[in-house]
View 1: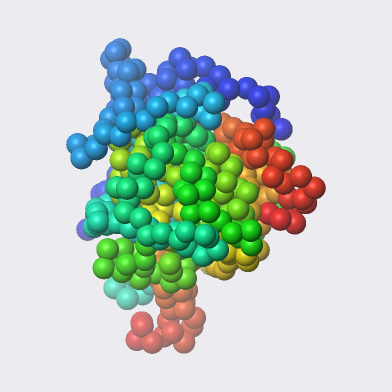
View 2: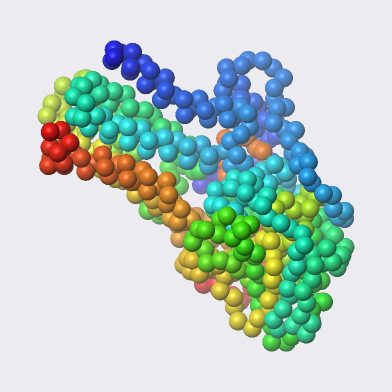
Length: 196
Length: 321
């Protein structure tokens, strides 16, 4: 399949979660607590795109089709896009754009600390996702972008600790299963097994 | 802090025309429409009712009612915490239909002179039904303004004549796995138990509640009978009651048993005592205001201090959270 076409399709599909929020908003179907709904939805899509991003290299090893990694950047940037919405809504509507209030919350609530650190690291990766940074950073670029593994783990902790109140971990376990599989198959001897 | 005056009326925080405009803006932008005349969309559902709603005649009680803008019937009945029917906010509206609310009896027992088992139809006739518009502040940080229908619990408690040794009242919610799919979850040790000190239960604000918006309670809101304790976090107001027991010991409530550090017996609304995992100083009011509105300040005792602060004179409310 033509990679440019595929990239375009992925781009359009990746905007559907956002379009859905606008449509639900228009229909007044964002539940009684729209901000909570939007915050949670963008958070869940962040972790979904994070999983998809992490799935591209293993797909390349398994299928032998090198183009999967071409989609990695698009998916990674969409993960950041939804994380940015997630963060901005919380900063704006939970903390009224007050930096002090926001930082206090980051310090006080461990699950927010995790999410915040993940978002900060993710911002670095997003900013350095272009060709110029790649050339400028050279070998360091790859090391820097391996931080996605840390981001994924922090995002999972953020999700689990958020769910702790109701101890309703069903969905969190599903993401934990997917992400840990995607991380474990990167361990060299595991990688050897699946690519042989 | 960028928040404004504590005493300001919630409806004044964002002028109505501005938040309606914001909502309008959002809606038009969302579909790329530039048509005028859509601004009233979504504002008309405030009085929307379900077809099943059975009327209740209740006399408005101004003394115990707030003047805040009321939450719409739709929001009150579709955004609920009622774990017996599932943990998501929309689960109760979806699954509580299976709750069979007639026949229904409530046992009032324990340290009383005249214990009784009363049919809910009889109980409803015990005193004149009132309509009271109460604030409801959830421990999770959101709030509603709800016109409840019922009468003070004290009418029932007086009827059973509490003994001198009775110090507390325990409330028990139905726990029937055949009717309540959420009981398969182990997050709470069922049945759901709540409790009040006897003087709190006797406070006229504590409402034995049978309806809202002039109709019998929808199942998801705790039909056929519940209590509403407006100066405490919402989980203190136990739903679908089958037993009211007077005791001499502080009841071990369900949430306290689940997470003792997070949910105390008193659980009075208190902006100065944070939940271990989040601040309680502000709340998101659900009343159809624009979704881009800021949170509002939470008031001590949810604004009911004049009626209830004397109950806690001399108590350290940080210790007795």
